[in-house]
Image (cartoon, rainbow, N blue to C red; front, side):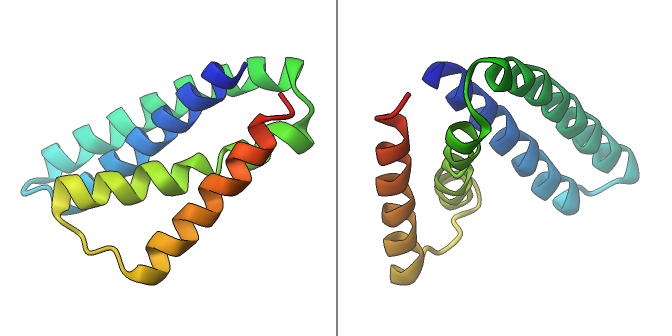
Length: 106
């Protein structure tokens, strides 16, 4: 089940990155492509999320989506060289700790 939750987070993260890329696109056509890819990824994420919710209590499953914070921050750093402040790094480490605690209950 943890693997499915990670897949949902990765799909959602990818969709958010596509949305960011849509804001940077040079043409309207390119913008629409990025938005369509984002919607497709979010659709797949939702379908898998429904499977997760059938098997895992929402009180345990939902906090696991905070993995998105980690994935998006790291991807933003790698793809667009966005700066991560000490506060963001500490906050992300706290999220990782919380996710690890939640995962231990699955």
